[in-house]
Image (cartoon, rainbow, N blue to C red):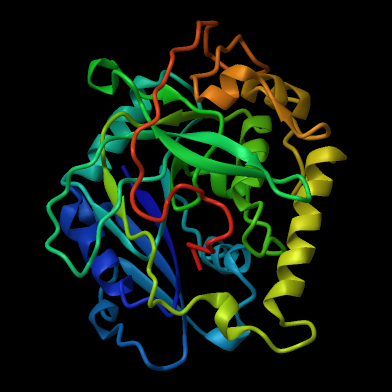
Length: 338
């Protein structure tokens, strides 16, 4: 089955290793179509990616970049009809057979439109890569001053005994696997700079009828921290329209508005389920900035036959927090994707 792979890269030296590893570790690399948004200043060498018909590199002067939403939207505009869509960051390593394993895992959900997403375990390119790590789920970690949820990841208790993916409340933008229909139904809103990106995706996908899951296998690793890496906000400090703070503030306001004052269609909620269904499912209230005890404790949500879902009602399981990779206690505000 074909997979369209989206990779956004902002002046990232890990871009080439990421794309080459994606191809090398796939069981069916010729069924991949990888499109990269390479935002650069002419000081990175990506020649190893040129000439490969499976890879398309979109080149942009980094000074034109307007954040992660803009970057991923450019990639999606080059979407070629595919069975599946995978979105990763440009600092990722892959497990052997990741493609066939993800497809099989999606089938085990028995959902018509499954999304598999997580914050993968970490790796450090300065050290020998040995794999390892355990699957995790995404949990609420509080709220920002303007009402956006903050996330962390916690270990999945008993993941070795799980017969398939576990249900998720939230998604991670740096590792997201979905049917190809996701691109047309939940296209990227390029007005979102960074913060709010993931809750925007989760709510829009759910209201379009997608069911959210976390893998119970480690299929990828992510380079966290990146202390010496140039970030988008470091380059974009010119007062005016291109300043990162202005872009971020506008994007945050857009996300919070869409969460609290629901608009169906366009870049708003989908037509399959109401936003109230997502809030009930996830155990979260955007208006009051509150969450249920189950959500705060990091438990799998109990579900009913939500509007268009094939999931049966079941009780939640308890999850215990595991130690996190260094620097990854809070997935808010580190501008990781950019």
